Image: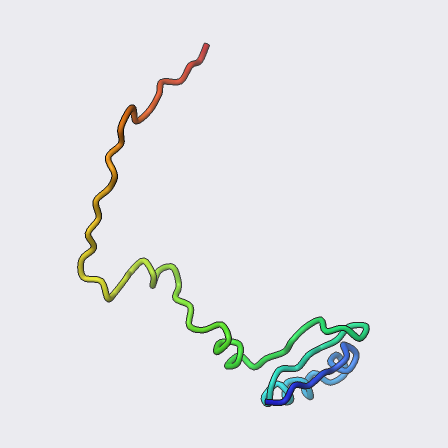
Length: 85
């Protein structure tokens, strides 16, 4: 893996060069000499992020056949009348 560093000016002048460099590793884009952004290929980004399930996938729980759920019982009143005085 090769890390390439480009100034913001270089990046703006030749984005194609930055995209080609990103195939070999991250491209650090600097502003005023300091790292400001990193360009990665989508494959590298997804690898770093890992597979993240959507909320729909998490709630579907396809591998779970049965879930035992025993809710706690409420002690006391469920509601209080509003005092409108």
